[in-house]
Length: 260
Image (cartoon, rainbow, N blue to C red; front, side):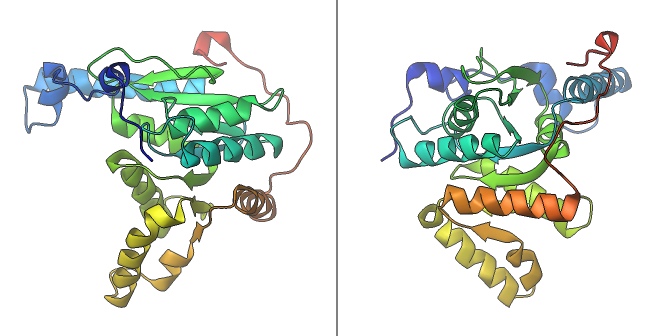
């Protein structure tokens, strides 16, 4: 059962009648003045460097995607919390978009494990947003594509629970990058089999119509079992990508570069 959003959640996630800043809307509305576009390019570059420096030492991450709209009593919230806990027990840093719902649940599960790390990469929307209370580190991004880059760049696997447009955008971005060889063949898991069943049937139609290959679809793990998913992720990244247990190499952080 889906819970109705509270007024604070509606405002936090930009669902009321407020408007985006004029600069943000102008950016994607065709050619602008050269000075405007140059300044926006500088801002995008600055935001990317900021993210690189802040996340340089986060360790091997797994990113959990999903809706902001499920409360703590929902079965998908509970599923995501268990996923976050098991990922943290396996030694991963848990990374999410930092908001409520599935994101909060995964971060919360990580914090159930002493010493685990929990990261939130927030998107700045028209109204004030606050991190969920279970993130150790919180990073703000103005541009969706920069935020998505950070959520992908530092992760060895991606676990996708039920969500809306944003979640599907993130899922298909990852799958496209893997399909085209821009990203290593990292594990991708869908959780919420009832929710995603129509989508999986549509993907099978894509295979039948040869718009994707059967191999592309086979890259998806589909399961509602957090233990199966996390064990599969852990085994794959250790065998295929060289991660091992033990103390990581000592690397010196440079405060003047904004590194954590």
